[in-house]
Image (cartoon, rainbow, N blue to C red; front, top):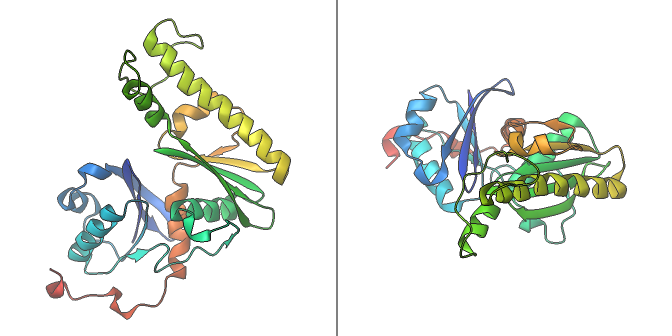
Amino acid sequence: MLLAVDIGNTNTTFGLAKNGRIVRAFNIRTNTYTSKGLKAKIGSFISDTVICSVVPEATRKLKQDLLALTGRKPYIIGKDIKVPIKNLYRKPKQVGQDRLVNAYAAANLYGVPLIAIDFGTAVTFDIISAKKEYLGGMILPGLKISLEALNQRTALLPKIKLEEPESFIGKDTKNSMLSGIVYGFGSLTDELITRIRKVIGRNAIAIATGGNTELISKYCQKINKIDRDLTLKGLSMLYPFKRSNSSSKLNLSSVK
């Protein structure tokens, strides 16, 4: 069975894939990850691992742990596996590999032109043309980061948990903050989708993924599809593109 891993700034998401299908997925907070916790969840039936990461230090630790647990060297997106999509970014290497994975997966699963939106620690919009070209996109602070900034950069606004607001017009400070963030991001998302469609085609599909998708999608009108496992599906789809590497199998006794 293939282990697909998406290392993000807040959570690391693991997916067990069989025959290209995600059969089980779970999250571990990136800053509290331990090899013991991982071993308890994945058991000993992993044939290979493919990793996409935006946290280099977490990648190094997980690679070491997976070598010890499975005896096999993980494949890293961007290094061992190149995402086969035409990247039209001015400086292609600046694009996060997770964004390319989402773009590739969404384009192949749902068709093009396409807008892939990831509501994670940051909110990213990735735009794919009718020719399956990665055109670029937008990066915004995520919902939780925005709430944290209000608390940290003001004298009187409290630290609160991200959740649904009680009403559109907040009747207290907490719900005024929640309404501003949740309804604000919902409106922002709809307006950006509308404006992007004017550029790439009014039939462009909007796909949403990421940890805060279920919450924010209730306040959007323009999102066509929610796919919480989009990145994991993309990693599973990209696994066949792995480079031949005779060192992928290692003797467990050589792993330190």
